[in-house]
Image (cartoon, rainbow over all chains, first blue to last red; front, side, top):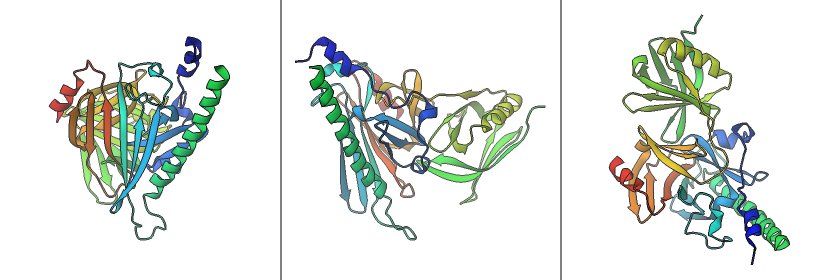
Length: 149
Length: 182
């Protein structure tokens, strides 16, 4: 079992970016699409015109589904009470805050005329990349925990 | 000499999660936006303006104008250097300070959700993370410690935000506010 000291190491907050000038510039971002920054282990989501980053450590899981003409991407975040699979409840530095719990994006699954890919490509790529980044992140966290413990 | 007129040939108005291109003209009397696709013109009289803010958004910088009526206009696609000109025009003609905002980009999914006019924004570390225009909400449901917002869908948007779900701490009467708002 980890000591109090060890827990502190993991509790240390992980930041996506220190300030706005460090945010990546990418056509996907300015076209209000989802962008995954592998280096900073962050996902940048278009929320009503604002490119909003979320660190991979805040994300619990992602799921993807296709229904009819649409493709859906659901992102579940960690929040107090959802600590399953995390080290313990201490991870939340502000448990009294309001938490964003879940986000769902929708995209058309059919190709539009004149375009070689369907709009849902972005969601599919995002799904794959989030899984990848999450895997790398989790593996590293586990290794660190083992070294510390 | 203060700037009286500004003309931006290609900026975008943010509507329903879509950026529509158009031309923005600012003069001492009013602000005009002409959408290049539909030709529709939005006119804002200088006297209606309540406040103006400026921050980096998804496409370049965003000029956010709040009117006394509660209506909010969001224009994107500005360059960093446009700030000085705009700030000059706003202070000289409308007597409004163009407030420069730094958004929180730390990547947190928590903070304080607060209502301001017709929008709901998440603030973490005292700076804004995102802002949801409440007129985009088509349905809201309140559960135990939970609020769900569903948004109007627009097929023009390539990637469209559909639903957001929030967790509220046990002792919080914010959900009542939510109900009242809709």
